Length: 448
Ligand SMILES: Cc1cc2nc3c(=O)[nH]c(=O)nc-3n(C[C@H](O)[C@H](O)[C@H](O)COP(=O)(O)O)c2cc1C
Ligand code: SF4
Image 1 (cartoon, rainbow, N blue to C red):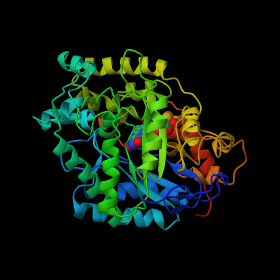
Image 2 (image 1 turned 90 degrees about the vertical axis):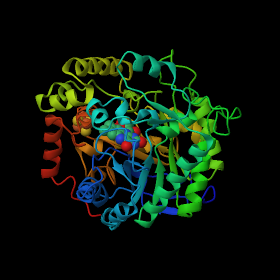
Image 3 (image 1 turned 90 degrees about the horizontal axis):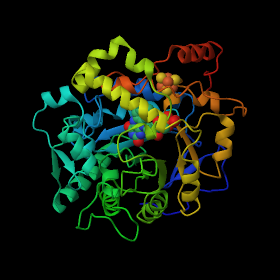
């Protein structure tokens, strides 16, 4: 891996370049990972180019492709995820890297395995089509998952990994990274804070192992797995810049313990920097796949729309169960209210203690907010949902006055239909109308 402090923390304007692990990124604005629902098929390349190239054309510094799965079977957290296990398939993604990189934008791919978050745990039709699937587990699942399993709300079928199996999984991250680098990706990004397997290793809520992959008492997190993943990537993919999201589970309801708090998240970032990670993205989340990472409104329109109902019934088993999930979603929306830049104080704490760039995302919506965060809480600033509403958003934010704000209103209507296998796009007419007006006014017509 590359050495520390190769970037200048004093140079913090949005338009200035930044160096991540020896790789120069043309400016400090990035598109955070968002499910592209591109699948693993003959249309994947076309879908990914359609999703990602507009942000590059509009001048984004970096694009982080949404989570892709490192194995051929199991581990998908949602419908339509792309697998990066087949070398011939990954080679075809070279067309995606070419399309993005021709505009000067750097492209990272996010690697993931769902573990206990895998789709068959919650998706009824998928489970019936793929019977007998087991989920890779770090340890015996925590009691809330076992309880939901007994109540028939989830269907958990865990396979607790042996030490050798954990090593093999880390090697699979390395192999996937090598294939991605061969296909032209500039950086590897790990899905460390989406309640997937990396978070499950880090978190004391999931990790009760007593081998080398258990909780390291000097950190308070299961740090050895991401350390080994870094080693595997270095050995198999060479000196490619490596980024990861790092979770603080501080947002989880109090009853869910033990969990990673902010202090442990800061220590984790320090250890990962020492282990050769080139940038970290500290993220406040929960221990489950809830709305803590996508704070905003209850997506009433997304749930009510008749067009998605059959998909919800497929996913949750019946109309009644879909209604129960919607009710749970409403409760979460009260708990995880939108807060501008909700990870800022966590990122600031991390930035004061590490020598690598800190990336911030989560509720960043205005140019003035970006200018305040850069050089204080973070070295790069990212957004996710606003790119669904405005695929060419960088054209409006770069070289912009402080009053410029995104059109996305955090309604989350884009997120819920994805459970029904629908594509990742903005689904709120008033917001799309506003983006259309801006397009007609030429707001997205910048040169790349
Ligand atoms: C539909 C959807 C899909 C997402 N997919 C991913 C993903 O694949 N990997 C990941 O790390 N984060 C994912 N996220 C989280 C975003 O990267 C981001 O952290 C979050 O949406 C907060 O940023 P925002 O307020 O700008 O949307 C996803 C978010 C949404 C709404
Ligand atoms: S549906 Fe549109 S406005 Fe609502 S959160 Fe998604 S992108 Fe933003």
